[in-house]
Amino acid sequence: MFFWKRRGKKSHNIENGSGDATGQGIDGKRGVQGSMVRYHMKFLGQVQGVGFRWQVRMAAQSLRLTGWVVNNWDGSVEMEIQGDEASIGELLRSLQEDRYIRIDEIQKESIPLDEKEGGFKVRY
Image 1: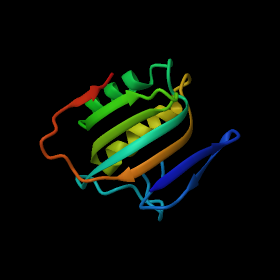
Image 2: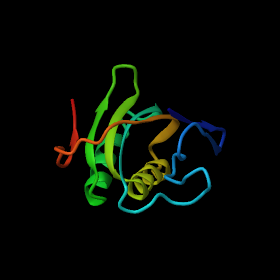
Image 3: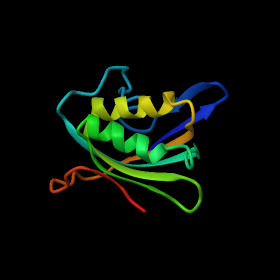
């Protein structure tokens, strides 16, 4: 499992896996285009009431990623996302650059691919 936490104005990554929250590997290189991966992720911070799920859906659809996103009762947001590593990294960067969204922590775990999944959905 991978954990990423924000500290102050500068972000620090805590490694325990193959990459960081920007989609870069431990060696700083981008993920290989075309290698399909699927992650279960949990986002903590100011992630509800700021358009987070809709931003994720729009970015995921434009990047041809599949999966789902849902608000949790505890104020966090959960997501499963599938696609190539570079596109997932691009989606995460777009979320971190949004002026209304503040991500304090990302918990990320690799899970098996869902070959039958099509599209990206907002769950309720």
